[in-house]
Length: 537
Figure 1 (cartoon, rainbow, N blue to C red):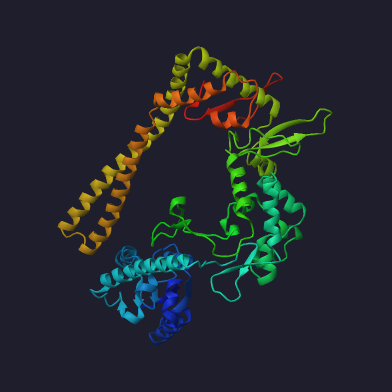
Figure 2 (figure 1 turned 180 degrees about the vertical axis):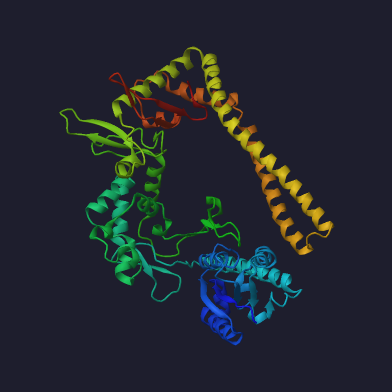
């Protein structure tokens, strides 16, 4: 009697595979697999399709769903067109073929390559898997080379044109100004150059019901229907601060194309990582600008200076310095005009935007005049000491720094100990693995597969240990740092008022803790972190 096989037909297609045409299309794979299952009288219980997923990762949604069916005992046979459809990571493919499938008593078939675990896989399978992985790596390299050539030629690759532009009707991979929406970009930069910050610009656009880029794409092309279909009218102008910040920093609007801002960790790991600015690929004058370079540079200068103009035309000198002690967000500046004597204050931005509903944080409310008085008094005290007894101030700074560095060193030292312990454990496992291979308890193929895994972890641990050791060494506070800061504060001898220049020169951040009330008395801790030296007690 034939063993009943509850069969899963698995199909996969990545974007890169599309270069091979219809021979690997999902429909072609489906036709081949269904015909094979019919001829071999396999009972098909489901089809699992990962369209647009690379074979170098096994975190594919429908692959994982299929393996859940295997775990549940509902699938005991998997059929693919060939080994590359199953995956392009030779270690992981070998792991499934050599360990998982035999343990779960799952039959695996690669139709076009005539590979079948029931009959026994051919000796060429490891070589086929290595070739499939090499092909993925080579394809990744070729794609990057082709993209770089396009960028150098002034072309852009994009799914959606940036707000203010549309696809050029005649030139592929090029932009042309959208006369219907350019005014939105001009309005945003006009507000910014006249002193409005990202939050104020966001509020203005929402109040004036200016449509977002997402809504415009939905209206014009039917994109993002899952977001906008049947949504309330407010969704069409639901701007966010992050969107405004992104637009204000985007060189697209002065006619430049900037590429290579982020990349995959590797051809296997598709996680995106941000690249340093010096590695960005910038091509100037690839299309017509909406904003002049003078206006753009002025906005960048204003963003960098962290100074925003208020409604009363005064400068908010603490801008960018004040932060919440609990969630780390910046503190929002506001003015209470309900009283006969209006006063300004700060409170936590995350609480202001989210916390009242979700409980993300608390207000951390502090009046502007109280903060001003406290910070001025601390600066005056340190300034006096710098003039009167510089050596004592130096000793005081170094003592405070030592305490903070000791806490950091303790944490890093514990992490270093754990990493060294794990390295010893991996070394021991590696030695045991070699012993098992020498004694014939595991195959050479399995030894090679597992040894590569351990070697990779060993290298990662070595790098981690070196990094932690270097960080512990660099955390030793030097007298030079303290002397540098003292020379700065001596430039502001006997200050009688605070300015943005003074604050940004001497202070890195001001951390506001939540206030407590005891016996009717309100108490609130404020931590000032000075540049180069941290806190001074």
